[in-house]
Length: 98
Ligand code: HEC
Image (cartoon, rainbow, N blue to C red; front, side, top):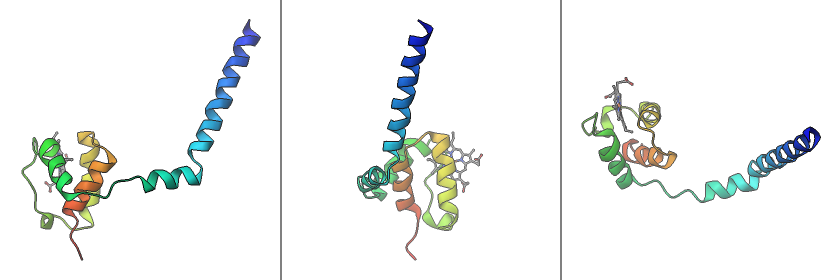
């Protein structure tokens, strides 16, 4: 009985490990990156009003430098529990063309 349970556990471990290897292969990563939608400043604005506005007034992109915005938005993204796409959309809104 114990040997049978061990075999089942081992079989699942092998499946889990091979699944992880497939998920990390370069072609799968490239496919996932290709599927990212283009960042949208309009959605960034919506993300702000739905998530950030309860603590902050709307900010001007000029309030922080292009170097400061990504660090602050990452920090606030974690605080507000937002997605990576929400973060990219807000960067589109706040990062100024140079
Ligand atoms: C729960 C309240 C809360 C939410 C939600 C929140 N913030 Fe903040 N934020 C703070 C506090 C408090 C600080 C001061 C620094 C700290 O404690 O991290 C801060 C700091 C900042 C700063 C730097 C200080 C400044 O005002 O220049 C920026 C910019 C900022 N937040 C943007 C955002 C963005 C973008 C979001 C939405 C993703 C967001 N915040 C969501 C509370 C919040």
